[in-house]
Length: 266
Length: 318
Ligand SMILES: Nc1ncnc2c1ncn2[C@@H]1O[C@H](COP(=O)(O)OP(=O)(O)O)[C@@H](O)[C@H]1O
Ligand SMILES: [Mg+2]
Picture 1 (tube, rainbow over the protein chains, first blue to last red):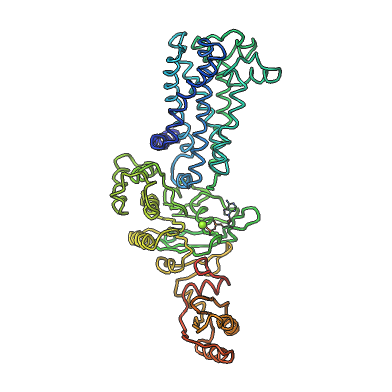
Picture 2: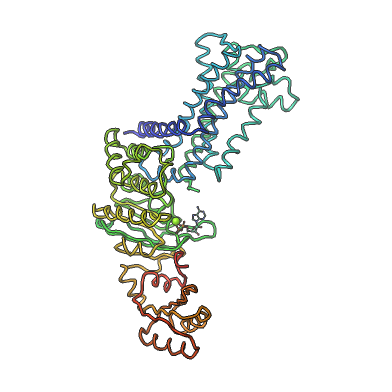
């Protein structure tokens, strides 16, 4: 067996095991299924009502999609930290399995969870008035881009999970860095409404690029005053979103694998 | 490395900050035998196991397992070993069967083989009734058995068990001993670590006593007992108030620090001169007006060995 096929095979086995865990653990099931529903409904009606009704609700959906799938990277953080704590990583590392499999299996199972969340959120979105107004192909591209970005975020989560000293720290560290990133973006308000420095950060934030791409591809127009300020990131949103995801993967996959090779149980 | 040696380590050193967890350990396990690595908490047992199972790189020194260098050929080593770590590493949300099936698959077995092997082990470890339940519903003993089974999935040549009975009730401990006995009967080479002297005595062909990362004695249980040479003098007195004087006397007569059981009014010490020491002790106790209810002179146990080697008792007797 080549290194690659063994890596994929072993990752598949680990992913299978992780998904059984998600299915049987009430907390995880809640986070994977109920939370996305809550997000769409809460944001749509709490913010939507105040900030511009139907058109704003439609604008909001892409932001909620991106926020939810990036928050799903916390599954990777907590999952890996848990496995470390329980000695399960020790067992894996003593087996003649691929060194990539525990991490790739984890990020892959989270990809499945994210796909499920996207499906649920899309159905809820349709319920609150969101529509896909672009072509079928563009819509497919939007979903693929969302999944790619979520996958890249999971690899950042992998490094955090392997580095966290305890599950409690992992739990908060896994989400903390995502709050500024997701709020200083065009997820909930147009970047143009923000004050000077924040506005620059928001314009160049990869979150904004993914959100803007998804809005463009779904054909969801911004309500008045929330349109992206013109500039390279907004004009090349899809390209920038793709590039950011690839750069994140290129940096965090090797870092996480290197960390995994040396990691010790707590 | 000769083929009749299954595990060999030379001058292993590992430091964590200022702690020397291993301070130059040598060991050798002949194929098909059991080595007991005996030492108190913090002695370096887990660190040694982690190095031999490729989980940790030593600062210096070399080691071979099943003919493969742990540093140069870690993957070949992993193919030849089964590890059961200090804490049972089972996935709580998976059933017992699923845990073993997953390990089998990760050893490279195809699906039918992994299934067959998982079922075999479930039955052998008396988990049949619980096989389809998530392992979080298992008792401590059942989890430990499941973890042990995980180490045996691929019928490894060398099995490493880190404190396999710590935290188990007496029945769980006996169960585990039985399983380890069977393993050896099947021809596996076993390294097991323990804090329990009786356990090493019971299961191991050879015992390596380690403390502060150093080997302080090695040999069979009998050899170790002989090495201590002396015998154990035991005195039981009438009043608790007499225990202190008795301890003082036995400290003078004995060759190591006495151990005191204040409640049982019992004091013990290792002595070099057997009956002579006994007479001397009784004479002095008489001078001190201590009422002796019972006296005994015993061949040393492994506990005595440990005490005389390290100058302190094991966790168990401390
Ligand atoms: N990862 C680590 N970081 C720091 N110190 C450690 C680490 N692992 C072990 N030690 C220290 O090394 C010594 C030996 O530990 P260990 O091998 O676990 O002993 P044992 O298994 O015999 O109880 C102890 O003093 C322990 O605190
Ligand atoms: Mg230990």
